Length: 265
Image 1 (cartoon, one colour):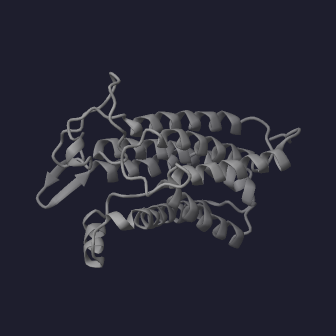
Image 2: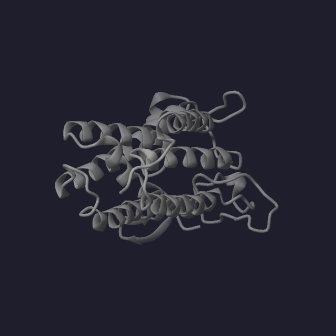
C-alpha cells in the first residue's frame, strides 16, 4: 500500500503514524461533546484531557514493550543488533494488548487518585476505544504490518510498495487483509457500544462488553495473521491466550455482578 505518504526534504509522513494520531483525535472528538452530560462526579475538562494523555502514552509505551518482549528472539543475534532494529523501526511494531494493559493501568491509577467512579468513568471512555483502534488498523494496512496469511480468495491484497513492512518473500502475494477485517469489526463494536451506552445499564457493563467482544474478535483474526506471532502456547499465539483469559474473566464478572435488572440512566 502506501507506508510513506509523502516526503518534504528529510521529513517523511508515515501513514501508520498519521492514522494512529487520527484514531486518538476521533476518540476525543467522539467523547468531548458527551462530557457535559455524562454525569460523572469529578470528571472535569482537565481530568478528562489528563486521562486521554495517560491513555495515549500508556498505549504507545505498553504496545512497544510487549512487541519487544514477544519479538526479542527475532530482532537480531546480538544485543546491539536488537537495539538497532528497535531504534530503526521505532514507528512500527506495537502489540495492542500491551498498550491496552498499560493504558488501563495508568487510567485506573489516575481515576483512583482523582476519586473518580472507576466503573462509570470506564464505561464512558471505553466506547471510543474501538473507534480509534479501527483507524489505527487502517494505518497498519497502509504500512503493511499485521499482514495476513496467503489466500486464494478474490479479496486477497498484494503489497508491492518498496517500503512495505510485508517481508520480501510475500511481496506481490495475495494476503488476507487482516488489518481491514479488524478495522471493520472494531467499527462495528464501536457502534454496538455506542447504542448500548444509551440504554439503561449497570456501571461496568459497557466496559465488560467491550473486553469480551474484542477478545473474541481478536482470537478469531489471529488464525489469519501471517506475521510473527511471538511463539505459541497450546497451539495458540500469545495474543490468543491473552484473549481467552480476558474473555473468561469478563464473562465471569458479567455473570457474577452484572446480570439482572439495570438501573436507569
